[in-house]
Every structure is written in structure tokens, then in C-alpha cells.
Image (cartoon, rainbow, N blue to C red):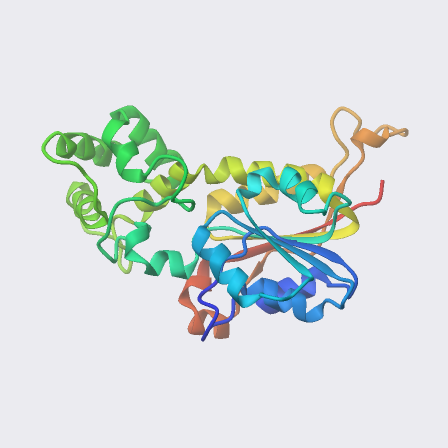
Length: 314
């Protein structure tokens, strides 16, 4: 996701705007408001008749958006999980669908930079990691009760961590002595459990923190849910733009677009294809990555991947 609203542009801003092909009277969705960088750029291209629905589950993002866009009748800001985007859209008056939708995944710079949120091992703070701090289970609470097998599975499946079992065993052993309730304690514990030398330029806790965050926030399930709903919510010709920051997300998005861009089984190759089996999306171009200039200005853009698809008319 983006850096702060001042000083830095959101990730792949120009590429997103080109992909969305914003119409002045169109209706658009920013499913991950963050600090409002993408939303502000979309609003600059909308006329008086255009509308934007901006969604985020982080209360800080909602407060920042309400301050930034106060008085702009074209934008509706809703706090919620984009996994429920269908209900959110209907309740906000967007039941007729969207001409474009942006889903910018991952953690925003303000979230990473705020030690009290517990997302980063670079700053000591409470081990929380919830994008919505008012709901769900914190990372500390989950680690206090999860079995060694469950911790291993999360680290392996969501962090692609080769040493998942060693780290899980160390966590279970350490929590018997004292709660693991700060980011510094967990990061140090992981570093100690890792065999050999760490990868150059990469903290030993990187994959584990990613995995635990994904699990705590149920990020992959939410991604699957929002994608399926957006196929229904997009109008014919509407564009879907998804920015992901690691391979687990990007693979899911890539497979989703491919699946909906093909004739469904078992109808492939047959002369008559029923409506329900026809492609619903058309892939637009190849995966887009940040250029050298953007990465130099914002190193967190290095791993960003943008994929674009267009809704096919029925």
C-alpha cells in the first residue's frame, strides 16, 4: 500500500490511473483507502456526476480520509472489511455497480511506522498486527494459544518459511517461560531459532511476521472474497486493478483472472457455450511493476505488482 499522504505518491499511481481509464461520470471503488493517495487522484479525474466509494477496515485510515475529503459530496467513506464489499456497496448506494475498482493489498506505511500497531519488527511495540484493532484476535493472543503444528503451518503456508518447524518449536518453548507480547521479543526469538547466517539485507523475522499478519487478518480469504464479488459488481467494460506485494497474493490474483478469462470446464472447445460458462473477464496487458525511479523514491514499491482485467459484456 501507499506511503503517507504527504511527501510520497502512492504505489504505481500513474499505472493505476491509466488502467482504470477514469470516466468523468463514472462510479469507482477504492477498496483499500489507506491515506487516500489513489482516491485523491481518482477524484481529480471525476466530474460533478462521478462517484467514489472508499473502504478501509483501519479506523486511522477512515479518520484520515474523512479529514482529507471533507466536503466532497462525490466520495463515500465506509469502514469495513472489503471481504464484504457487496453488502458495503449496496448499503452505500453503489448497488448498480462500478466502472472500475482498485484493491491495493498489504500494509500501509503509516501502519508499519506506528510501533503501537505491532506490524514491524524494526520498532518495538505490542504484538498486535490487526488491521482493525477493534475486532479479531491479536498476534500475541494467537501465539499464546496456538499449537506447534498450527504455528508451523501458518509460517510455512503464508510465509514460505523453510524453518517453520524450528521457529514454532522455539515459540512454544519460550511462551512457557514468559508471554510473547512484543514485536522485539518475537523478532529476537525468531532470529535465535534460525540456523546459519541470515540472508543479506533481509531480517530473519521477515517471513514469519508476514505469515502471522496474514493469518491474524485472514488476508487471503478476504482477497478471494473481494475478487469474486467484484466480478459481479463491475459493469461491462469496468476495470479491475489489484496491487499485490508478495507471491501468495499475486499468484491468487493471476489465477483468478485467468480462470475468469477462459471458458469454464467442461464447455471448452464446444460450438455452443452457455452464458454461465463464458469468460467474464479479459486480461489487460501483463503484470506491471514499479520503475527504477519509483523504487528509488519508495523502496517499498520494489515488490509491488499490478494486474488488470476488464469485465466482459454478457
